[in-house]
Each structure stands twice: as structure tokens, then as C-alpha cells.
Amino acid sequence: MKFPSFTIAALLLWSGCTQAAEHATIVLYHHISESTPPSTSVPPARFREHMNHLRDNGFNVMALPALLSALQSRQPVPDKTVAITFDDGYISIYDTAFPMLQEYGFPFTVFINTQPHDDNQPGFMSWAQIREMSDAGVTIANHTENHPHMVDALPGEDQAGRTARLREEFLRAQARIKAETGQDHRFMAYPYGEYDLSNKAMIRELGFIALGQQSGAVGFDSDFLALPRFPFGGSFIELSDFAQKVQTLAFHLLQVDPEDTITDNTSPDVTLQFAPGDFNFRQVGCYAGGQPMQMEWLDQKNGLVKLSTEQTFNLRRFRYLCTAPLRDSNRFYWYSKDWTRSTPANRD
Image (cartoon, rainbow, N blue to C red; front, side):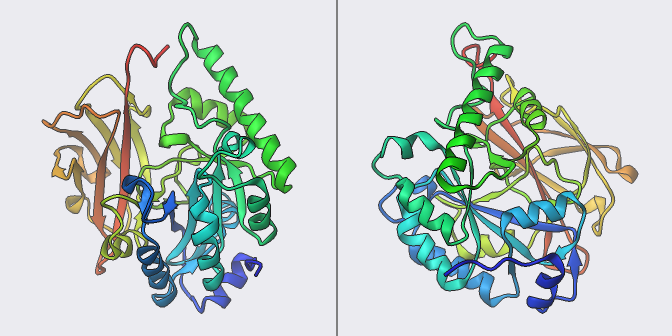
């Protein structure tokens, strides 16, 4: 079965949707299995519940290339549009997710790091399996060659050297994907969801769109060098959680200070400026580790707020989350600010 391809206008008619929107959500999975690491796995039965929810509740599942093209060119898409993605090219994507998604007729994207497939590494798909999916209409895109921590420098490596190394690896992966599948999309996913300003500058110079692993909806005014996706796995697999996230809307952020995700601080402050939307600034709530943050409104009329927390985070990666209810609705606007802890070993 080949997945269908539609223009935006056809999508609106096909889905029976008369409401166009400037937002969507992108969901992220790794393993669809009960025998792989729980933190990155969703059991097949739970994955089917997720897909049933999309099918039965008026969602439009859209191919990622069409969605990114529409949003970047500011073309509206059907309300409640979702794109499905997978990272890393694990075998359960082919064995379990692929046939299931063919049943639903849902398009999806797999971001692969190419070296495990070249090495025939156990637990990963073969190139023959990837080509079979590609021939069926599955989008195959770049997740680098060796899945590096892109924010980390090698010993003795300066920023220019780190950028040159990553650029060469990225382009080698792009060439391998094109050689094996014929696909040559201009978007990629950051390994581990980690990136810094130099990574974003490299992706911009190469003319690519990039996706992270921070939660949130996407919209016309999103950062196309670090688009959010909702990751599912571990404790985030319940249907109620999935149902809430896939109907969220994107905040438009006029300011994020600091812009970089890298920090030496275990509880960094951040200043955000929210553009007006169909929500009340007084109802914006921000959280760190599930606990409310201190919100100092510098200019509430214009959506400018400073966030701080007394919690400390010693993990390599952590995030702050902000939400606000859509007026007269059970839906929410959603944004998260990701942080990656810096160490002398991984910074220039």
C-alpha cells in the first residue's frame, strides 16, 4: 500500500475539515515494542490506541514534507493536523509500526543515522527494509551518520573544527540516504534533541529545516531550525497524555533570552515574550520539573515575562514548559524551552 499524497486544498476537502489553521503537532517515537528500553519504547497495543485516537477523533495525519512546506510558506493546514515521525531506524519500526500504519493509511517519516544500517547492526533495519518502506511512500530523512552529541567537541577540537566535522558527517549521511532510497529531503532531526547556536547556524547555511525533541506544537512562526516534537515513551505513553498533546496549538514567541540551549547553570533564568493569541496572558502557566515556576511579568500587556525556579537540575538535559488554555476550549497552547548542561569536556 502506498501512502496518499495530497495538496493542502485537497487535504481540507478530503478530511471534511472546513476550518483551516496555522498550527499542527509532530509526534515522535523510537521503538514500538515491549522488549526494548522502556524510556524510548511504546508497546504496540498502546501505539494502536494512539493511532485509533487520530482516526476516530477528526485528526488529519499529514506527511511531514507537505506539512513543513505548508507551514514555512504560511499556507494553512486543516485544524488538528498531526505528522508522525520515528528516530533512529530501529527494527520495530519496520516489523510493527510500518504494517500498522499501512492499515490506517497514515504517512510517516523515519529519521535514520546511517552507520548502523551500513554495519548491519542488530536491532536496526536493513537498507533493503528501508528501501521497501521508501518505495511504499515512507519519508526517509537525515539523523546524521553516527548519532553524535552535536554540542560536544572532541578533545582539542575548537568550534570551527567541530562544525566542519559535523558538516562532513551530516553530508555523508545525506548522500547515503539518497544513494539507497533516492530521497533527498532538506530537513533533519538533531540526535538526542541536542543543539546549540553553532549547530543551528550550520543547518541554516546548508538550507535545511531541523527538528528537535522538545515538546510543543508547530506553527507559521516557529523556529524552523529547531522545531518541537512531542516524544512518546517511558512514562509518556498514556492515551490521555497523547490525546491532550496532539490537539495543542503553537505559541508565537517574540523573544527567547537566552536563545541558546546550553547552560552551566542548574536552574537558569529565561525571559520570554509571547505574542498575543486566543488566550489570556494572565492564564499562562510555566513549570519546571512539574512544579510551578516563578513568573515575573516585566510587561504583562505585551507578554514579556521572566521565569526562574528554585529547583536545581543536574541532568544533562532538562526543560521548562509553558501552557495557556485556548479560550472557550479544552485545548492548550504549548511551548517548552530545552536546556543542555555544559561541561568543560563538551564546550569549546
